[in-house]
Each structure stands twice: as structure tokens, then as C-alpha cells.
Image (cartoon, rainbow, N blue to C red):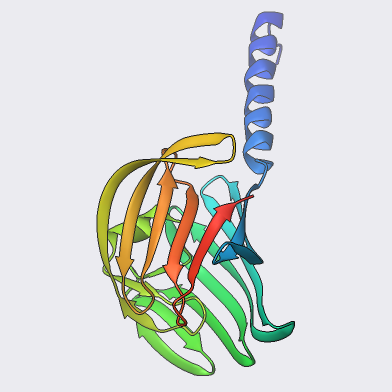
Length: 216
């Protein structure tokens, strides 16, 4: 079979274009958001969110590391790491390990045909498939009435108030962000920019201290 030069050129152009598009989709650079965890104006740790997208799949890695010292003695320590796997906007797998001041937790969740199967510290339960992790990077959480605690695996009721758009500034950086207030077991204020990216978190600690996550 003979193929005309023009037709061959068109086929090669289309094929190369498809290959380039596939390569670009497969190698989309990961987006990393890093935050300084502040307590009453003093940095006590860091929080990082890494989001990788490949076609319909999104993978998220979250790490938190903080230490509170009083008179040079460690009064509180938290180390937390978690991974999330999403396909077509649906959570299909979640895993986390936490050391909360010596209390350790291990949580995993997988999507089944009738919901999420959650294993938290060796105990298994099945929860509604629409429950999302309370990891805050995903603004879709603001439209839900329950959330999966990423540290201990409990499903908590939440109520969300939309406080509208506000102007924020971080040094020389100024932006508009949507301010939400979440009330639940751990109440906090959360801000997302116009692209839906997490930009700030504020909450009150159990000792009355002001805790904030600010971008770095």
C-alpha cells in the first residue's frame, strides 16, 4: 500500500501531536504548597501539600511537623504524614500516620462499591463514599456536612459558613481569597484563592493560643 506524502505528513503530525499531549499530561509538574505554622506569632513548624496530576488521577502528599517548647523543653510535638489518591474527582485511597505527642494513629481508607472502608488503629468501619478527608487542600470540603479526621479516622459533623471574599497580603504578595469558617470538633478559619488553592488557616489552640498557617 502506498501513502501520499501529504497524507503521510498529516498522519505523522497528528501522531506526534498526540504523543506530545500524552507526554505533557504524564509529566505535569507537581504543585507544592508550603506553610509556616505560627503560634502567637512564633514559628513552631511546617505544613506541606504536594499535588501531582496525571490525566484523571490526582495524588496528594501531606506532611506536618511541629514542636512547641516552653523554657527550652518540648511541651508538645506533632508529626503527621498522609497520602490521598483521587480518580475522576473521587477519593479512592487514603493513608496516614500520626504521632500526636506520643499518641500514635494509623488510618487507611479505600473506596468500595458501597462506600469508604476505613481502618483506624486496627478498627474497621464503613462510611458514606461522599465523606472527604479534612485535609483542607480541597475546597470541595466546604460543601460537605461531614469530614474524615485525617489523624484518628473519626467522621465528624461540620458546619461551614461562607464569609465572602477578602483581600489578603503576605509580605509583598497581595491576593483575593474566599474566607470560610468551619465549626466542628476542631473549628478553624480557611482561605482559598481565586484558583481554589489553600492560602491560609487560623484556629485557636486548646490553650487559647492563636495558630495560623501562612504560605512560605
